[in-house]
Image (cartoon, rainbow, N blue to C red; front, side, top):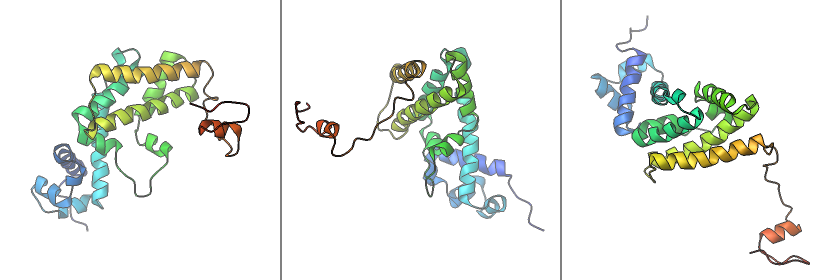
Length: 221
């Protein structure tokens, strides 16, 4: 009969989350976690198979905290833009948790769709808000969500890595510009036309774009 766990999975994950908050993901080791719990590393591996599993259990707790952090969006219009602003704000105030949630490498990489799925219920909440406020189809709302998430993620990553910082006004302005442009494009029916068309290497357009002279025309500036 296997030994009874000295600590529950929830207790171990909570201790792991505190280590990440204070010292970052790299500090989440079996030794540091055992010290935090006041024990050896053995009880950890009674409850979990590996430290990777511990990290993802801590991430689940971090995701709950993040969802609580962005939970005041309902009183704002547009509500979805408010979520984006709070996402960047979270990166500023909780950079290590932001890295745990959104900036972890995968052994072999993964598809963008899988990354979005890792966000849990936030995807459904955001697309529902977009449909409600802008009368878009589910497909259009999802495209807008994807594009805005990429933009907000990028701003958050810049803040979490201390590359740069943004004031609340700057966050609102930058997200607002992209958000408004995307909504206008979708509502005008231009979504399907916004595709980069490959240019044949020997075409006139390829020559123009490279700054070379084309027959009967001028060099591009």
